Length: 192
Image (cartoon, rainbow, N blue to C red):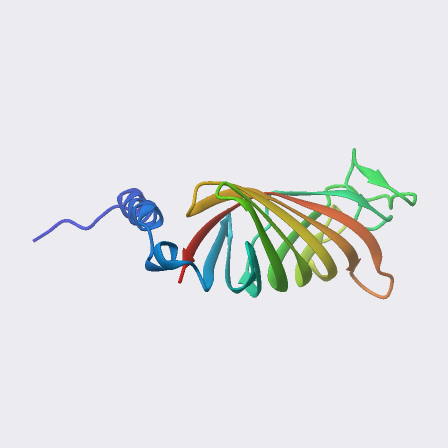
């Protein structure tokens, strides 16, 4: 009887397979890419995207994902979504402990590769969030609609970077302008 792998051993094995797969050149890189498939990973989320080449070092595509953006900060907002210590263009409500956690999103993206180690995504995004503060027993549903920028640095297959969202955050009848920073996302890229 073979002993089962522990959770830690399975995690290391999966990580090794992903790193090995990400370091192998694809057929598309040798012959010039027509597009790419991406997997964006963060602490609690996964996003899949596909983009096609439309010009030298420019791709256009779509992305959709579940979970994510658990490590974040609202840099600027109105009274309801403001986080202590950050900017607010209105008087904050009296509740603290603001938390905002994305649970699903969809995006249209334009990706510009400036070098093999740096690329910038810009696009439009809609998302659903769980939002709660010290006054809530359970999270409320919030939404986002707006633009985003996501610079990514790293190697040919794996990059990491933040994501900045600028747009309308809403929980109820009164939307607020918000500037929201997701601290870190990792990206695996597979060309074809």
